[in-house]
Image (cartoon, rainbow over the protein chains, first blue to last red):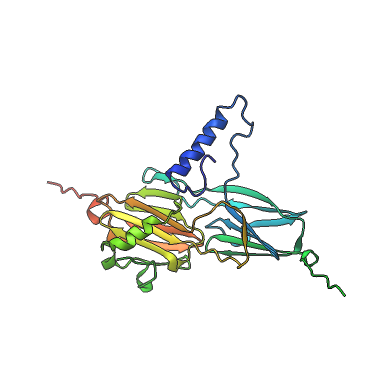
Length: 145
Length: 153
């Protein structure tokens, strides 16, 4: 995708375009082009006891979101159906910015997470995933006698 | 006057299939916003929600992605010929959260559109479901296609 999921303002967009232009003008750009990994937008944060991830993917049926955790890697994928009506001589599509189709994003998690303690909730179009860290990795005080 | 997208007359909305079907009360649709609140909302840096806009013979359908915005935090306003969509993202975070990687760094969406004259801003219908806002803006009656019967004579 050549644009960010949520453009912030015109200056940030120009900066992004400038970076993309530079990579296009390289002698031998990557065979996979500029990279798609833009959808859904992700926010990842940590607390001492958990890793918290927010994926911004509105308009999904939560039962069709594929979320899996394997060897420390969280994979989020699915398909967002297009909500557009079929175009015929009566309808005109003026603006088409929303992403539709299959998506996949991968996040590597720190080593101390507990794979059995992952929870996910989908609300208002945001998938919130919370993975607890292993108990043994919590800092513990050692008493001195 | 700001109006939030709350359902005031659910009984008058035809066959809602989505869980929430808010509509703008017709009388509030044309009021101008208070200048101070408008300036305040412009001072906050905002995200621009991506939209799809489809026009057919009877009106325009606008679909916007506003993930993280609950119904009570979504504001739809019409001032003269401008439609403004604004919403606050609520991202509940545990108190000791350290952000590691954030692609969404602002907590407010805002986008405005200028509506052309044949669109009937008084009859905008709006629906918010799973972070997707769907607006239907019909064309005024005289702008809708009509067949004119031809009399034999």
